[in-house]
Length: 208
Image (cartoon, rainbow, N blue to C red; front, top):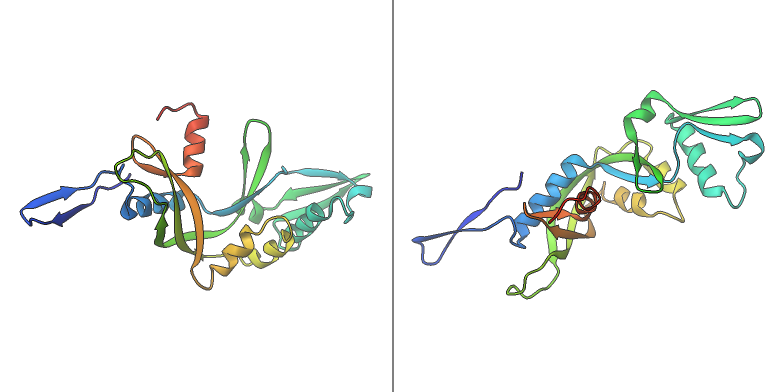
């Protein structure tokens, strides 16, 4: 639930209350904090489990190196279990794996989200410049954040994804000191929301 903030302005006898639709630092901060409460630090990979391969394909071939590297890392950290079944190899989630993995599907593809920590907002750094007199439906917002409660395997995960996804490596740095990130905030009837929430609302057919 988005909050309303009231501030005293001159003259002191007047009390002005901001609206959730105002493009203010407090509204963007509230929206990001709400988003982080419901969304862990995760990265998606186009794969689903159990995942099956022919034994001859379960090798670090140049065309499959990123996937093979990721699978081996997940086995090493007890997130997946590798089983040989005749001419096939299967990779299946362990009990620990089910705690940090969930499946997300868009219109055409299935992604597995691997979650490795929690985001905590530090500060709103910059809001995209705009004319306050003009109505805006979306704005770029830069903010600083930290990564909290990072999983023990996060460093291995960042290394496994090296070369085609830098998000985990960037987040890993935020475990030691605040890091900067930029996102797009969209205006809805209830107030400002993170671009991922807006995307899901739009996919559901909700009007704004």
